[in-house]
Image 1: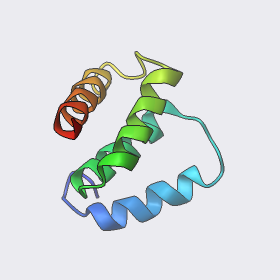
Image 2: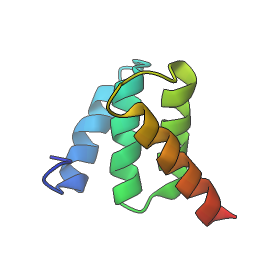
Image 3: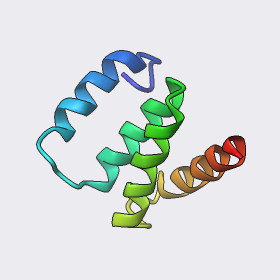
Image 4: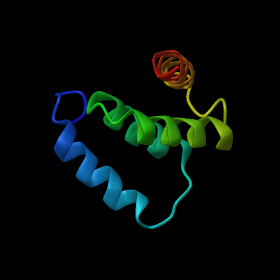
Length: 78
């Protein structure tokens, strides 16, 4: 859903998955990116920070994207 731009629907599923309290870096990353696309900068930052904190190398494909997005969010915030 994220890849097809259906961010609102993707967010519903991501939040449902997170409701169980699982600390999975990949899931937190995807939720953070969904919030980023929805313009929810604070929650995007929180999810992405948590993903990187749990495991900085959680994905060969997405770890650098998480770091780059965090830098972008930080620079736009202040």
